[in-house]
Amino acid sequence: MSLHRYLVALGSNQRHPRHGAPSAILWAALDEVGRRNCTIDAISPTIRSRPIGPSQRVYCNGAAVISTDLEPRALLDELQTVEALFGRRRQGQRWRSRTLDLDIVLWSGGCWGDGHLTIPHPEFRSRDFVLGPTAHIAGGWRDPITGLTLRQLNHRLAKGLTRPPPPPR
Image (cartoon, rainbow, N blue to C red; front, top):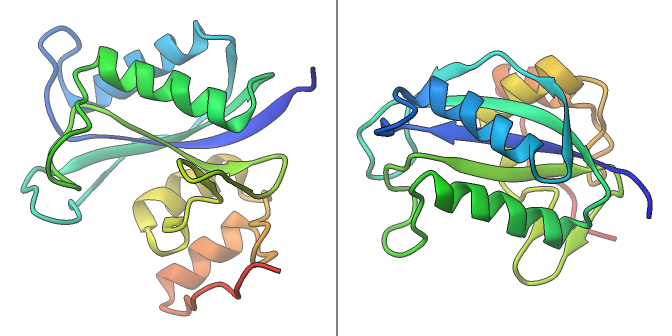
């Protein structure tokens, strides 16, 4: 088995009865991920961001670099199990308020797609609440589609220079 590295985006905008505020939920979730055959290599500072869609609650966002021997689909299953432990339910309206959201953004293996998971995350290049934290801890990591580093993508987004990526080859 080989070791894979992943960049995972974290988000929360609801209190949890046991863990409290969204920022505390993110830390507790990383502790739980670390118990699941994953090593947490780096954690970004958290930021506050406005929600996308109908939710009115402000989000707490961050990112982590994770090492594991899990393949992408197996890691997604583990992350969704952690989300469920924190009260996440996957029915109903998209972008609604949630206690925990864990998204695989990038993978050291490049691109992945299987109908349930797409890596790189299709929307990450246009989301400052993802690019800011990820550029902080993995600024030199390259997007396998555009070839740009996270630091470059974050700068382009901040300056309004973002363009859609070219189609996959």
